[in-house]
View 1 (cartoon, rainbow, N blue to C red):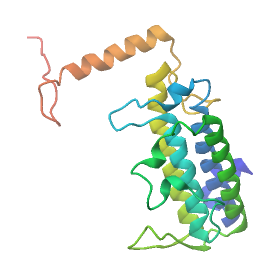
View 2 (cartoon, one colour):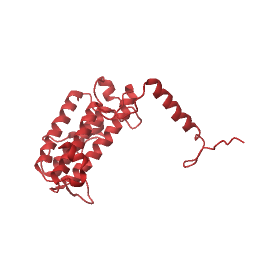
View 3 (tube, rainbow, N blue to C red):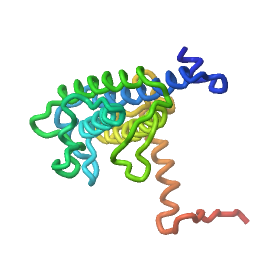
View 4 (tube, helix red, strand yellow):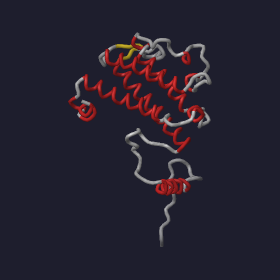
Length: 218
């Protein structure tokens, strides 16, 4: 059924569409967890860019979004809610793990959240109505739109996690069973990096949109 849902779009039924969307959502969830594997607590938590992006914070944020969009939006809020999203929470409280939040607890939370979310997905039709109170201009929505929204949201943050993980230990790739990267060894990647950098150097003092001067033998 997965093959039909993903490849034969033209003949998809509403059920096939929901199956396909759910597959893409779950692939993003699984990839995000994979990005956290085999790292120390420090590496899971440490910020790697000036805006503070960190792996465990990304998971904490996506867990809250998954829970709110498939929970509160459809009248079945996740039990206990998400304190990091409360009105009195500090800015960006959902984007990092405090000292009393263990990685194991946050990973378990994410898994429990998506089980709750999947009950919503499985129990409703794609055109089932929902309401997003934090979308003031157009709060009315459907399950189908929220599925697309959360696929985008999840995969966007998986991309963040991919870069953060590479900065930590060089590990990269699309998912555990398919890196989707060029099949090269370390020397190939070093050479490739040098090639990209050499090309970029030609534009160090040039405005955006320009081309490097071409040397013509005469």
